[in-house]
Image 1 (cartoon, rainbow, N blue to C red):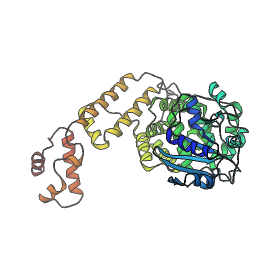
Image 2: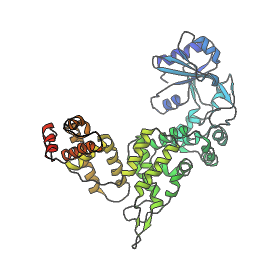
Image 3: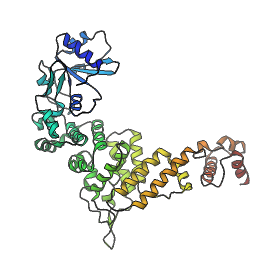
Image 4: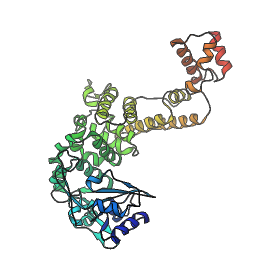
Amino acid sequence: MYIPKEVLELMDRLEDSGHECWAVGGCVRDWLMGIEPHDYDCCTAATPEQMQEIFSDRQLVLAGLKHGTVGVVTEGGVVEITTFRTEGGYADSRHPDWVRFVRELREDLARRDFTVNAMAYSPRRGLADPFGGREDLKNGLLRAVGDPAQRFREDALRILRGLRFAARFGFAIEPQTLSAMHAEAAGLDALAKERVLTELTGFVCCAKAADLRAGAALLCRVLPELGPCMGFDQHNRNHTHDVFGHIAAVVELLPPVPELRFAALLHDVGKPKTFSLDAQGQGHFYGHASAGAVLADGILRRLKAPTALREEVVFLVKHHMDRYSADEKTARRLLSRHGLARMERLLALQAADLAGTGTDHGDSILVLKELEILLRDLARQEGALTLKTLAVKGKDLLELGYAPGPELGRTLNALLEQVLAGELPNEREALLRRIEIK
C-alpha cells in the first residue's frame, strides 16, 4: 500500500518509539479497491500523552484529545492519529459515553461500523483484517461489524452511511445488516440535523434510481414528505412511473451537484397534494411546482441547510415547470433576471424531468438545448443584461430632475426591458433621449 511520505514519517516515528501504528479505515478500503485514497487516518498503541511527547517538535491539533485523537500538521495537511480504543454507549446518538484506551488493534477495529472499514495496514506488519472486510469487498457486500443492531444503536447515522456506501460502491447490503438498519431506523429521529444533511447529501449525490428505490423506506424516515410519493399512480399518459419512481429516474439523470440532486429529489414532492382527475381519467397536478417549493423550503430549513443551497433548490423546484421559447428576446430576459449559472441548472433539471417520464419528449428537450446554447452565446457578448450594466444610472436621472424613489427605479427597469427587447441600444445618449421624449 502506498502511504505518503509525510504520513509514513509519523508512523515510523511512533514505531521507532515502541508503539504500533497502522493506517486504518477508508484509506485501506480504497487501496484494496484500486481507488487512490484522499486522506489517511492512523491508529496507534501510543496514548495521547505519549503522542504529544513524541511529536513535541511538531504543530499539533488537540481538539479530539478526549477521544484519543492527536492531529499532526504536515505539508500535506493534518494527519489524525488515534489511540486504540473501545467505547461505551451513545446516549446522544453521536458521541460515546466513555472511551477506554486499549493495547490491541483488534479491539479498536471491533468498534467500527462496517467490515470494509474495519481493516488496517502497517508497512511493517501488512494487512490486518480480523472481520473479513477484504472478502466482503471481493463479494461487493456491506456488512456491519459484530452485532449490526448494536452498531446502529451506537450511532444511527451509520444507517444513512450504509446507504451511501452501498450506492457509492455498488455494494449489496448483507441481509442481517439491512434488517437491523430498518429495525433501528427510529434512532435517526434523534440525530443532529446537520449530520443528517451531510450524510444525506453524500447519498443523494451518488445514488442511482435503483439505490433510491431500495433505500426509500429509510429515506422517508428523514424526509417524510416523500412518503406520499411512494407508489402514487400519476394516471397520466406522459408518465410511465409512479411519482417516486419518476423522482428517482430524474435524480440519476443529473450530475452529482447538491443543488441539482436535491432539486430533483424534491421537484415533484408537491404532486400528491395537488392531484386531480379529469373526466377522461387523466391525472393532473396543477400548481404542484409552487406547492413543492414550499415543502422543499420547509424540508431544507428543518435540515438546517445552508441558505444558498436552500434558496437555489427552492427556485429550481418552483420553476421546473416553466416553459420558454428558444429566441434571443427570451434568452436576454432570462439571463438578466437569473444569470447564466442558475439558468443552466434550471434547464438541466427541466431536461432530466422530461427524460425521466419514460415517454418521448425529444422535441421539447431539443428546445431546452437550443436555449442553453443561446444563453451561453449571449453571456459571452457585451451588452446590458442587468441594471448594473445599463448605460444610464440613477444619478443620470437625478440630474434630469427625477426625485429619489420608486419612480426612478421603474424608469430604469423600463429602459432595461427595452434594451433586452432590442428596441433600444445600450447607449447613454439613446437612453437619455428616450427619457426626454417621454
